Amino acid sequence: MSKACSTVSGKTVKTEGGGKSTIVRGPTKMADGWRMYSFVDAPLGIYYPKGTAIDIPAGYELKVLPKHDRIWNGQTVDMYVRAEAGAASSAVAAPSVKGFPAELQGDWCSVDGKHCFSPDEVRSENPESFLDSKSASTDVRGTTEYTVCYVRNMGSDGCTASASMFLRYLPAGTDWNCMTMGAPKFNVSECKPDYTKDHDVSKARLVIQPNHQRDADFIDSPADVSEVAARPPAPASSRTASSDSRRGRRTGAGT
Image 1 (cartoon, rainbow, N blue to C red):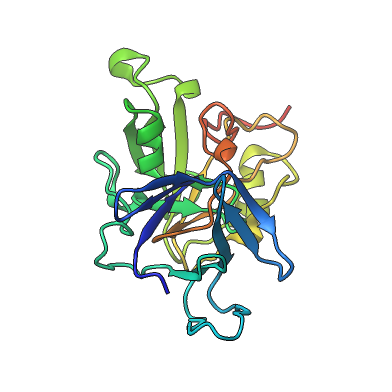
Image 2: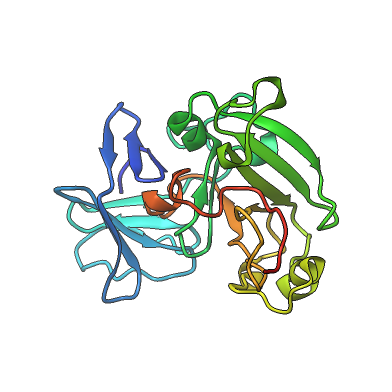
């Protein structure tokens, strides 16, 4: 088992020794149904969520550790285990980004690994970004709405909608049902897509709200769940301001 620690943030993998690599392939579905992630010339490994078995060849003196999320690299014979919250390693601990509240810190990813958010990535890609507003949601009781500006392009008034990201934080225990809590508020009859089933109410969730709600149907958004360490990477295209259609303001619904 590897004794070194790595931090996975989007497609970037950083090691304790200062090394940095980029994931260029994946997720690739393997024969056992789990996903492989690879660098340009070598694999990072196969991601196995906790509760799943790993078929390790005979002769390797490794523990499967089914109670943890893991990345298994059969080529280097390394088993990376997700660090628990509060782990001492500075390489695994999520960075604290100045200006973002504690509840938004760290990495957040949807259940399929395709939609992700982290203040660290936002700040790295947009050095002038800042949290513009925070308020109790008027749409979903018990939740909090945030506006993140990529750049201050309206002077003291902050930024335009096109330069903004709009977040909703749902603490653990807060329900979400698109058909009863989303669609009726915009006087539409259906949710397309509908991510209600992806909400695990036992966990805090973060939703990056869509740019607008002007379609005939309500546009629901994936529920990102906070991750501590090496979460499954998401495609870079789902996290850039120019290509992620979810990063914007909801301005109304209906055609």
